[in-house]
Length: 498
Ligand code: ADP
Image (cartoon, rainbow, N blue to C red; front, side, top):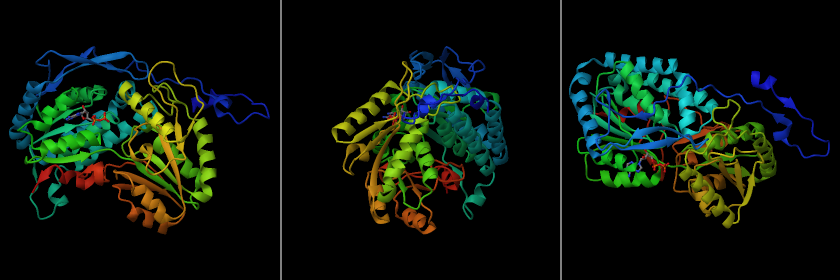
C-alpha cells in the first residue's frame, strides 16, 4: 500500500536499543475531510423534521484531536422530549403499524444500503467528532452499522419464525440512550432491531458525539421513512433523564456507565417499562503458556490500545501464566513502541484522541492512582501531538487484585498485568471484579478454552482473538455489566411482547 512505499528506513547504530519509532517513519496519510459536510448548527429531529429546541439552547461539540469547535447541537428540554415522544407515538399508532412487516424490512434494507453508499462521509465524521482512528471507523464501525441494518431487515417479516408458536407484537415507543465510544454503531444496535420489530424510537446520542446521529437523521429523511418513526434529540444527562422518566415510553434501552445505569434502573423500578442496560466492563485476557504468543500479543494490542481503550468490553486486564510472563511483557513493550498515536484522520494512526477532556482527566487520575498503589508504569515512548487529548499506550505491572486500577473501569489505553499459575486461579482472578461483560483466552488446547469459557462469568468469551463482533451474536453482561442482551435473535426479543 502507498503508505508503505513512503516509509524511510533509518538505520540505528549497532549498539542502540531497538527503537521502532525512529526505524520506521510513516509519511502522513490523512483521509480527506472535504466531502464531509458539517453544518454550523444542528437542530432536533422530531416528526421527520429538523426543529429548533423550545428553549433555544445549543451546546458546542469539539474535535478532541484539535480542541477546535466543529459544530453546535440543540439542547433538548422536557418539552422537546415530550414532543419527540408524541411524534413517535403518533407514528406507532398510525402509518408505521399499518404497513406490512415486509415493507418495514425494505426500509431497513434501504437504510443499510444508503449507509454503505455514504460510508466514507460517516467514517470521517465519526473520527472528527469522536477521536477514533479513521482505520477503525472505516473498517470496523461503519461496516458493522450497515451489517446490523441488513441483519435486522431480514428479521422484520420473520418474527413468528424467530419465536415459533407465539404471536410477537411490538412494544410501542422506545427511548434509547447511547454513549460516545461507538456513536453510530450503538445507534444501529438500538434502532435496527427496534424498527424491525415494529416499534418507533426517540434516541439520544452522547453529548460529545452527536454528529453522526444527526447525519443519520438526514439519511432517514432521504430514505423516506414515515415521519416520527425515528426521532433524535440531543443533550446531556438531563435530556436522557427526561426520556427515562417519560410516562408514554414503553421501553428504555441504555448503553453507558454502570453509575448512570444504576440511576436509570432505580427510576424505572415500579414502572411497567421494559429495559435493557449495557454497562461497564473490566475484561480479562488469559494467556496460557501453550498459547500462540505472537498472536496473543497482537490480540492484546488490539483489545486495549486500538480505539484508545474506549470499548466497554475492552481487554483491560492481562492475566498471563507465569512461565511466559516475561516473554509476553517484552513482546508487548516492543509492539507498543511501534504504535502510532496521533491524528485520528491519518490512515497510519493506531491510537487516536481521547474522546473528551473529562475522559482524559479520568484516565490520568487512574494513572496516578496506579502509581500510588505501587504499580510499575510503562508507557511507549512515541511522540504525541501538542494539542488535543492523547494518552500513550500504558502498562500497569505489579498490581494486585484489590487495587482500584484492577477493579475499576479506566476506559483508556491502559492495561493492567497480573500473573497466574493454574487455570482455576486465572478464572478466579478474572471473575473477581464487579463486572462481567467480556473476556478472552489464548491457548493451544480446546479443553482449556472450554474450561475457561464455562468458568468466566462474562457475557462474551473470545478464544485466541478479541473484540470480534457480528450482528448475529448476542451481547450483554453479567453482574454490574448490565441486564438483557442486544444483537442476534436475543436482541429481537428485547423489543417484543408476546
Ligand atoms: P460515560 O460515563 O461513559 O460518559 P454516561 O453513562 O455518563 O457514560 O453516558 C452515557 C449516556 O447516558 C450519554 O448519552 C449521557 O448523556 C446519558 N446520561 C448521562 N446521565 C444520564 C441520566 N441521569 N439519565 C439518563 N441518561 C443519562
